Amino acid sequence: MPSGFRYASSGKVRDIYELDADSRFLTHEERIDEEATLVLVATDRMSALDVVLGDEVPNKGFVLTALTQFWMDRLRDITPNHLVGWRGRDLPGEVAYYAGRAMLVKKLSMIPIECVVRGYLTGSAWSCYKTTGRINGTRLPGSFRHGDRLPKPIFTPAIKNRHGHDENVSIAQMRSAIGAELTEQIHRLSIELYERAAEFASTRGILIADTKFEFGTDRRGNLILADEVLTPDSSRFWLSETWKPGGIPYSFGRELIREWLQSRGWNGGAPPPRLPHAVVSETARRYTEICRILTGQSIDDWIATARDTDTAGSRRGA
Ligand SMILES: Nc1ncnc2c1ncn2[C@@H]1O[C@H](COP(=O)(O)OP(=O)(O)OP(=O)(O)O)[C@@H](O)[C@H]1O
Ligand SMILES: [Mg+2]
Image (cartoon, rainbow, N blue to C red; front, side, top):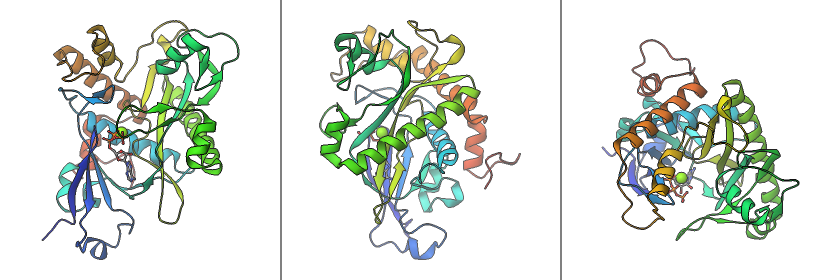
């Protein structure tokens, strides 16, 4: 008997399974939403400069899935999201094997915009500000150092480009690409999601320097939060107590790897250099550390809960 889902494609980090065209899965599983036709499986692959590296970061896929589930649950009163199921018992057929890494989601028509929100000045926005005094075409009031907190969070969209790097655009350019109304809605939601998350993270001693959201629309035209949410792949998390303007705070994401690659002078060419074991293992440690700080649950507990082997009981509810 077919599982109902078959492997469809892979992004840099996720493997995507789609509902089999001739599957009878949906009619047999009434608790699964009729639009839930994709399973996203987060692997341990790591990318930098849009290139998949030759080394995997152990347990990273579990961290991405645990945090996305955590945030989607906390933020769902702001906007509906694509997540339908993540526990082994909610995952169809063979994909239940990936419980902990897998999300059963509504298949959406994705809006080709990376919805970046920045609360602090770092990364590409800092490089751009340093040379032009502007970010995505907008001049910042006053003068800023690296890592400074911005007067209020800013929305700096990028258009997703299938064949190369994402291209930063102004909000006016985003309007001409997807329309004024959708731009307005996405802008407002992205800021609200960031602000709510940043407020929560601050109670755990964490600053969210920046993050990226993706949205899609369902068959009825509703705007839905998709992809991964507030993970160390999509965000920069800083330890508050180490933050000071002009300095480099302790961070939990890909920065160690980026810095090491930069120190080697790598600029995205193939093949990417192999990473030293110490850089990979310290990155893996920081991924699981930020997951525990934010969710209050260890990665082992998450895996046990997702696999329905959690005998000690779950803090995550039904
Ligand atoms: N609900 C959804 N419906 C359809 N596609 C989705 C949904 N949620 C996420 N996606 C897409 O699935 C892919 C996830 O895979 P992954 O994160 O590995 O891709 P990626 O390499 O980051 O690709 P991209 O450059 O397109 O973001 C992304 O292209 C993302 O836009
Ligand atoms: Mg992605």
